[in-house]
Image 1 (cartoon, one colour):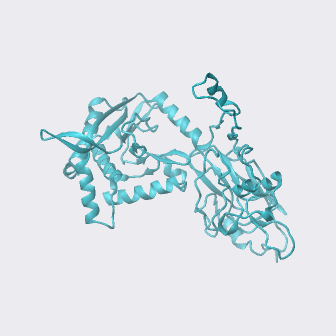
Image 2: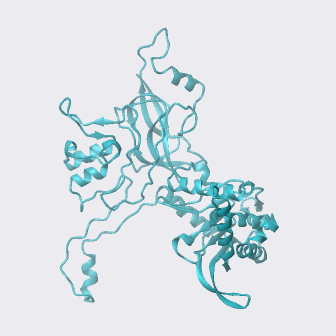
Length: 469
């Protein structure tokens, strides 16, 4: 046997480390070329990492929840060297050898060689699990050879299907007979939640693999009259603090926002705008083109692009080391999206080249992929201006933090009925608050105010947008 050590690759954009979320294989399993062996979380995304070697797993370097530096050992695989004919490769390895010599370099699903297994749709990963219904990451497609195992039992018996080694270990620790467990996963796969439910584990949930400390259920307390001085103390008896480590994307968000506040002298200005005509325009567009529906966010993106064409100072970044301001030639529009993993900002590159219908389609596809955790790290960086629709949270206004190193961010609150003066008469209109946070180093209030006023005017009179194109 020849042992091959696969090092954690650079998963994009010069990332220096990644956290091991879940091993898909265990020591002793057999893996094939480009089979996914581990799921890791970087500062930007959750990524399936395939192994470029085939053989038997000898060692896994790092436990779930551990942060591994790029370039350090990740998995060791023993390749078979017997069965060669005339000095050739063993059966089944010819294709792999040819691609290895050609420099396959396949470190991410979808790149390099193309004969790997189908990529599963990743379920959103919860940062903190506080109940026995935590996802165990069971794949939604049949596992590759060597990764699935049925628990041993009498020949011919219908044994339970267990894919995750974590589930098997959990069953041993809890004393659960897997033969008595009904799997709730695809094809009857037994998941972690099934084992925990079988163990009747409601109050003693252990620490998560990523180091998260979960809440323990509070025991029954004696009744205390409302308002009694002891009621507050009694409610706290048996409770435990919830400790959430800053790892992965949460740490990246914290670092980026802190850096933005440290480095950027930001100013926020805002204005209320009558969006009645904008909603009517959207309805007219969608009625005329039912096969190409346009969202309000897409119209706002088009308006932003128009404003940045008139005020390019906001489509920029400050190079502090070079003591210069760099205005971008293209608009790489970031769209703030809330996901189960946290706030991410996927980027639509060269958005100024897209039509309004194309913008709508790209926005829908990109935000859906972001919420599903399917965007590669490269799609989450390189923005030059961000649009944030925080109205989806039911709020009117905000003073958002700029997405460093960008120079500005436009936010929109909810669109609600409000009294509004129209031609000297009081009327009920659809009103929204627009806010612009900008880096005061790239421009003064005149430019920022001009941009925001242009956006508000186009919201109130969409026909102006045609005149500026």
